[in-house]
Amino acid sequence: MFAPMRTFSQRIRAAILVDASLYEEVEADRSATGAAMLVVVLSSLATGLGVGARQGVTGLVAGSVAALIGWFLWAGLTHLIGTRLLPTPDTVSTWGQVLRTTGFSAAPGLFRLFAFVPGVWGLLIYYVATVWMLVAFVVAVRQALDYRSTWRAVGVCLTGWLVFVVLLNVYVIALS
Image (cartoon, rainbow, N blue to C red; front, side, top):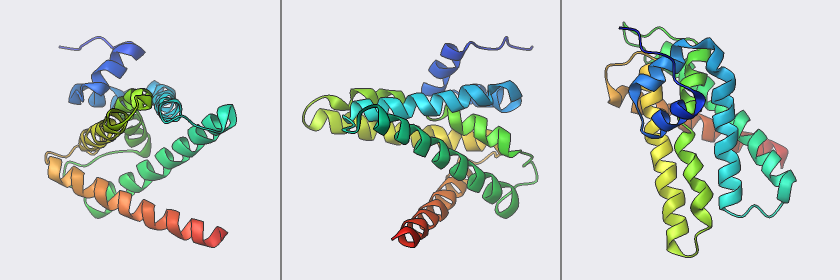
C-alpha cells in the first residue's frame, strides 16, 4: 500500500529517528532536494548558534555555505565510491538520490543548538548529535545505494570521508 508523503516537519522528525523509510521516500522524491538543502542549512545554523559563533551573521552565513559545499562534495564522493568502486548487484543510484538522503541525515544536527549549555554537557550534546548524524548518514547511504549491508554503507561512508579529508587538506595546503 502506498503511504502518503510526509510534511517537511514530519520528514525532519523521521530523519532524527533514523527511520529508513524516510530515506527511501526522499530518495524517490526529486522535489525533496531543496528541502534536503534546507535541513543542511538549518543544522549548520543550529551548530553555529550552539557553539556561539563569534562572527555574527557573517559567520553563520559562511558556516552554512561551507556546510553546503561539504555536503555536495561528501555526497558526490559517496555516490562515486558507492556506485563505481563498491557497488552491489542491486546498486542503482543517482547523485541526486544520495544528495537528498544525506541532506536529511543532517537533521540530528539540529540538537547542536543546545551545545551552548555550560561545561561538559554542551560538549556532550555536540558530540552525541555529531555521532547521531553519522549514524543517520550511514542509513541514508545504505538506502540510497540499495545496499543490504550496513557495513558496506559504513565502508563507503568512511572511504568517502577519508578522501574528503585528504582533498580538504590538499586544498588548505595549496592556499598557504
